[in-house]
Image (cartoon, rainbow, N blue to C red):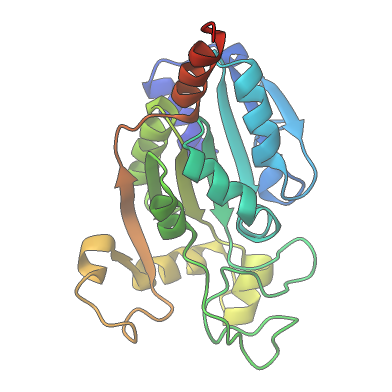
Amino acid sequence: MNCFLRALHELDYHDMQKFVFCSGIGCAAWIPSPYFRADSIHAAHGRSIPVATGVKLMRPDLNVIVFGGDGDIGGIGLSHLVHAARRNMDITVVMVNNMIYGMTGGQVAPTTPLGIKTTTTPYGSFDPPLDTTRLVATAGASYAARWTTLHFEQLKDAMKTAVTIDGFAFIEVVSPCPTMFGRQVGLKDAVEMLRWFKQNTVSKDKASGMTETELVSKIVVGKFAHAEKRTFADHLQETLKKAEKPA
C-alpha cells in the first residue's frame, strides 16, 4: 500500500475519483478499502478481475486497479487472470503473495514453495509452486514484474509503470505473513521474514544462469514483460467500426 501511494504521488496522480479499485475477500483485498478515498468494490472470492473488466469496458476513462492475494488471484481466480492477460485488458492487477492461505488456517496454496509444511501438507508440500508472473507474461500482458516488500524502490517504480502503461499490467508482491507462513518455516516476525527474503531472492538475470535444483525455494525478482501492445479496447473499437459499416 505504501509503495502504491508513493507511486501515485510521484506521478502527480492526486484525484482518486479517477480510480476504481476491485478486490476479493482475503487479507490483501482490504488494501483499497477502507484505506483509499476512492470507489472500491469487494467482489466474490476469485472474481475481482471480471468485475474490473466490466468497470473498464463501461468507463474506459477510469484507472481500474485490482488488489488480491495469491489464493484469490492465482488460485480460484487463475482462469480470469490468464484470459485478462491474453486479451491485454487495460487494467492493473497487484497480487500480494504470502505463499500460503493465511486467513483460513495456513493451508497450502498454489504458490507455496516445495517442502514447506502447512496444515494441509504436514509432511511438506510436494507440488511445484505456480510461477504466476511468468505465466502472465507468457499469456500476453503488456507488463509483468515480481518484487518482494524488501525491494521498496523497485516495487514503487514497477507500480508507476503498471499504472501508466496501456494494456494488462501485473505485479506480484511477495509479502511476509509471520502469523502463518513464518510460523511454518520457523521465522518469528516480519523482520526475520524480510531477512529470509534477502537471503532467498535472486534477480531474473542471475536466475537465467542457475539450474532448476539451485532455484528451488528461491524467489526470482525482476521484470518479466514490458512492451507496448494493442489492447482489448483497441480491438473492440476496431470491431465496432466494422460493424457500423453498411453491408
